[in-house]
Length: 266
Ligand SMILES: NC(=O)C1=CN([C@@H]2O[C@H](COP(=O)(O)OP(=O)(O)OC[C@H]3O[C@@H](n4cnc5c(N)ncnc54)[C@H](OP(=O)(O)O)[C@@H]3O)[C@@H](O)[C@H]2O)C=CC1
Ligand SMILES: O=C(O)C1=N[C@H](C(=O)O)C[C@H](O)C1
Image (cartoon, rainbow, N blue to C red; front, side):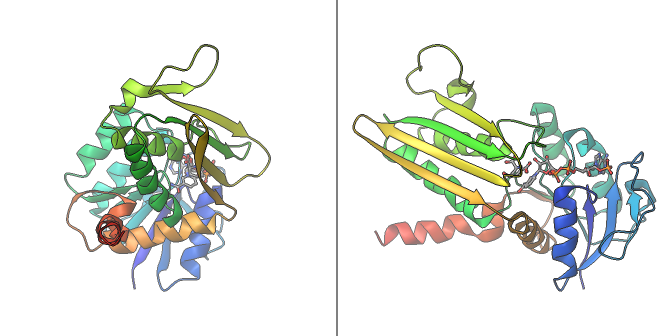
């Protein structure tokens, strides 16, 4: 049976993943927190004790799932490399330096990065690409809403949807990214973001594609973190079978091939 280590195990998502693993055919094998965590040594809901990554020995886990913080990314990738196991990285708020760390680690281990592990967002990404490419002159704006404890914004998902919209038009995202809208006129072709933070909203995204007289709104709402947890566990199961390299949720779901077949039927 596949043994999975969860990084960020004391957090909202870490606990959801431990719960998902406990109810699956896989084994929750490590609950990793930071070396200075108040939770070190305490029991988890999965019958483990919270531990630091440095306590894990080679052979302890078959794969890692990381839902922690950007500041922990470098040490989490080093842990996966030291143990020689695949890692599913789900942390958002990453910058270009973090991107470089992901690329470099993927040379030696299988690595799947997903700012959103839900199947719905994976499909939405492709729909946004398609819609943006189909209506190249339409204005695109992205709105996201999350719980009040979320640290980063716009969310990783909002940014991945913005990149899909830019790709659909053959544009470089950095050239069309208007960031969170404030004062000033809308630059034609730009993609702007609106960010809401309130109460316990799990994760909502809406992509507005508007042209004079009509608009399309592509929306996705998550009401239960188990959606993200089950997606991450699916990704880990798929990733252990892959050679070293960088992968996405779309790869793990074989979504592009499936959509290509469906599009031929239209
Ligand atoms: N890809 C996806 O589908 C999703 C991604 N996310 C992203 O996942 C991340 C976590 O979200 P969430 O669970 O809400 O956040 P939380 O703040 O609830 O949890 C983060 C946890 O990371 C732990 N942590 C901090 N530093 C380290 C470290 N060096 N090593 C190991 N663990 C560490 C903290 O625990 P301690 O202090 O005890 O060490 C904390 O409990 C965020 O970036 C969020 O945006 C969230 C939902 C879905
Ligand atoms: O922090 C969260 O909660 C979430 N973060 C991810 C993101 O930044 O897109 C995914 C999800 O929407 C929940």
